Length: 153
Image 1 (spheres, helix red, strand yellow):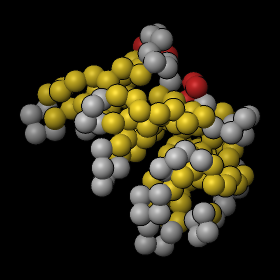
Image 2: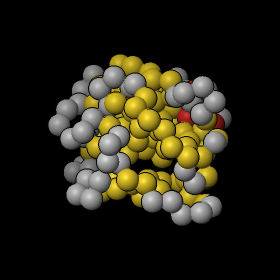
Image 3: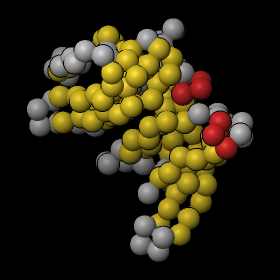
Image 4: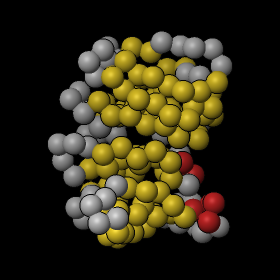
């Protein structure tokens, strides 16, 4: 299990992603991230990558779980900030990131970090999930409901 801690809430200039062994309930290690606000974390099932929202940097971090090292930092498009929710369509190499300022869904290629497209979305999104069977994203936020289909992304 991966748990984000530290950062702005702990009054530290860095955040930690703690790796917990759920069989023994013991912490295995801490992964230090040099930003004070890390939000959503998404794990790749077919490989060792972990994606995390580096919210205070308006970027996405790509981490190697085996090596516990940040491999890449992908900046969000200019003006898109407060990235909190994230989901992954691993089969189609799409990483979905939602920002609060402004409310936007950003679709990235999960291999390169290149922005494929972006759409307006509800504001103050706290969480998002992806349904691969129906190719739908579900965003929990305020404002008007919006149905977002991922076909063609």
